Image (tube, one colour):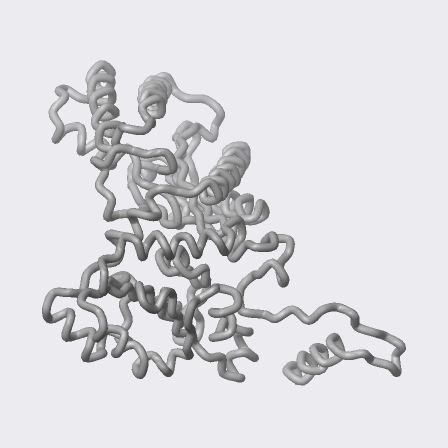
Length: 410
């Protein structure tokens, strides 16, 4: 019955119903399973493939990647898989950053090929009628050509027929190790090159490109950070009345999402008292005791770009003298490190400077007896920071010793 009502609704909305003297003049917009400027004008401007990023920028990314790839090599990038929470309930899908960066496709089930001879070739899933009823439309071959501007596109069922010849014409393969799928890894042509050690991780090239953000990417990252900042400030104001880790986690997520974030960048870390010293604390199930500090490590994702903030404060409204001394040391260290964030410096150098300042300050406060590294690292085993972008720990193949350049985010 429910299906029949939906079908009738679609028919009525797309036809002129003369008997009721009602005429539908709306242009029918093709649904490709993700927002477009036609279907979601409130999110995308004309010419944008994903919110804030133009089709031209995606095409330029492909050209830059081809410039990095050796002659007679091929890049294979699979979409992220759907992960299941139960046998019938999937987790919210998040696209692999490399696949999204190159194709603009936010959906699962595809494999993209990039080569000097073929350009961008996309193998796309095919929608089954029953899947459309339950899950909605998806991007298929037409969308790959018309929306994502692929040079070639085929249904996934053609992959085992077409891809082997493309691989055989290549002397070296680069693929996305994180999303590698048996659909191409089981091909004899792939296994032959892998046996000869001619299959490498594509991340050495994609991370090099993603490491330096374009002006459009930087704009999205600033917006993502702004949303997270506003949400965190409101959570702080909320904390005196509702001193519960779970409530503060819910508050910050709510405030992020009503400001446009699609999801949190990671599960919020909200640790009261000793829980704040657990680096990736995720239970968020304790009441925060009066007089304790609360640490919140949060970030949100806006149209594929993430933010990551950590702050500590007293929900009761004031620091104790010991808390204030330690907070002042960390704040002063933070300010010095921010001043060092300039082209030419590296994350390693900035981190080492923070260690020197904190070791000296902790010894003066009587917390450390000496400035030996082993004693300090028991108190703070983390780094001063990490690269930030489409992933929280972005561009993991890029060394922390690399001098920073304009367009880097961390």
